[in-house]
Length: 208
Image (cartoon, rainbow, N blue to C red; front, side, top):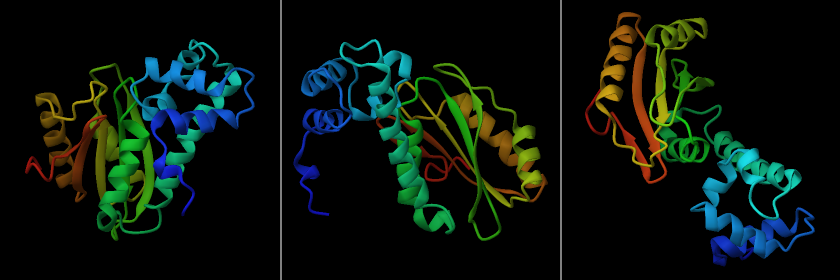
């Protein structure tokens, strides 16, 4: 689509988006204020409404609309992985993971439950933790997989620090999940760790 958006930098693009929210304050000034606090547009879209409202010029309506922009991007990416084998669309899958999880301020664990054709049955956020830890209950993951008649799963969690390098705890937890899954005939295709600076695949690292 030739709309010129690709030529805009973050400040110009954010100013454009803010200008259509009908704010009374100067859109470019708000954009500058936001980018002074947040490192990029991704951080802004994922920021809690309460935090956004602390930025000069950002009212509740503007904060809500910024969150909506972020969710719209997530939904677009998610639509690309629904009703088709996810393993054959890995790039779209990791882009969705990044958009939905990379900029969150707390650790979250989500699980993708797949059928025998590796088509998505359910995408669920199962746990929310702190800035550097989220509790994981492998048996609860398996219980949910059995409820959904899933034959395979993909684990995904984020590192708010931005560094997606798996911790020892991540590795140990994954091995526990794999062990229980194997006993139930459920395959763990991968565990993806997402950070602002990229993502890491346990399968690619031969940790599965």
